[in-house]
Length: 235
Image (cartoon, rainbow, N blue to C red; front, side, top):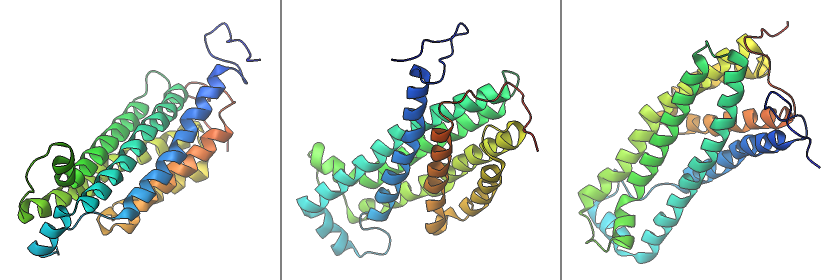
């Protein structure tokens, strides 16, 4: 049986608040898995492919279907990321207090990242999705070449910089309040530096890894009350 909420409106350990906290924290793990699978699937033909190869790719209904199905992975990953972000920022805000602003900065960075992540994924699949669902004529090879590049640009530049804002703001708050372990805060700063090289692709995988580790820590702490407002970590 769930434990009733306390008089101040917060659920006690074992109550509904703990269950929703576990769902929010676990959402980060699901995002990480889906994001990595989606990234490793690769993009449609692009910059280095000749026009005949690109035209032949989009003329094949099976290829278009594969691209459309692949779009569902980042879309679902984005939904799970929002669940993770909401839970994380709730804990950050409670630890920081109403007067602070880093939790808001972290939230803005996370929303900016997921928006550009979804926009980039949509741009990469736009040609195939338009032909599949909109019954539009096959786009020119030049347009089909540009769209995946636009998708990659949205993710690898403004998208990753927004993610860096999330990681750095979270790490600063972790050092200040102890809402996350100090080792994870320092690891976050390292991850932020690595993400600056995100356009090289492989460093991009650091973000799902960071989200997964934070999710595991949040799951371990889901039943505990967040640190008091403005608290300072011991040691």
